[in-house]
Image 1 (cartoon, one colour):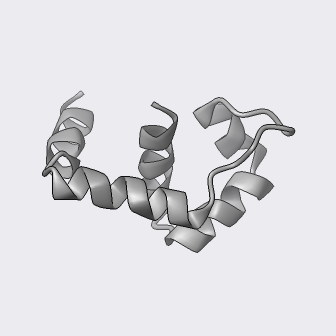
Image 2 (cartoon, one colour):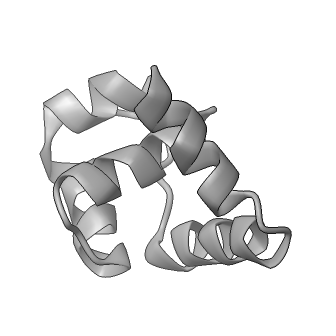
Length: 71
């Protein structure tokens, strides 16, 4: 669920993978939303990209987006 929340933040704020990585280190509100503390390990841009690509390869990205926007 943590990675899904990261993708949600990325989409809402129109952030690239490097911008998302930086925001996870800088913005306490982002850390709280995804459930990380100040001392938690953060996701890097490569991990974010790989997760999004894995969802896309299985055509789950559009299904996930449809579920999230229908709520």
